Amino acid sequence: MLMAKWTPEHEAPEPLEGPIVATITGGTILWFVLFLVQLPFYGWFDDHGHTWWVWTCLAGAGLGLIGIWYVRGRDAALKRAAATVSD
Image (cartoon, rainbow, N blue to C red; front, side):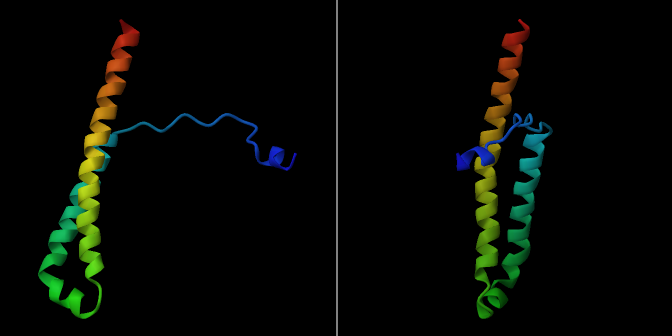
């Protein structure tokens, strides 16, 4: 009975749609640019124990590439589904 108070009483809202591929691509580019900007200062980061900043940016860019692949496939699947429904 205790869980009943945590059960939502309304349906979840529809997911927001927008330029998802462009958003993920832009974020990926931003992570990679941040990596490149920090690279000349690697010695400073190393001296101060902050090399993880550099590698975090590279990891963000790498994960962004996976994200681009994923959202492009999702976008294509949504377009195929919409074309099937309208036919």
